[in-house]
Length: 176
Image (cartoon, rainbow, N blue to C red):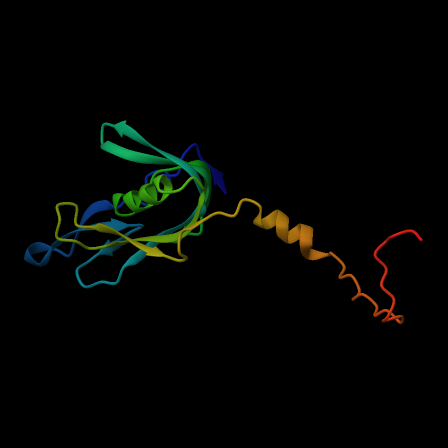
């Protein structure tokens, strides 16, 4: 496992390389990841699974334009070789970034999520596009869920109250 300053597709080593598949006039410009060419009509290549709890987000400006930095606890597994990464900051591809940022801004709570990010061939200049497959509905995090589960796990059940033998006697706690 690697602990990183921030999780990005680049820091996890899943940004594709530009390449050409085939030779001569049959050559197809494409992108490739781990020597797997992304070709037309080929199924999506899953590259990374990310899960975590996002507690906040803020807009950041870089030479690549505006993006959102999510802060919380995140873990990712590179599906091509099983390498695991962890970080407290996360940058997502544009296809997912806007949805997550909107969800964060609409709530004061943390958000839990699990997604699988993949690649597929595209006619664009880069010859690939990112895909996102949600593996659970993003949801507000219950901050106390794990503690509640532990706290209530071994609570013994009290026995049911015994029925009174003297049904006609009423005791309201008054002294006689």
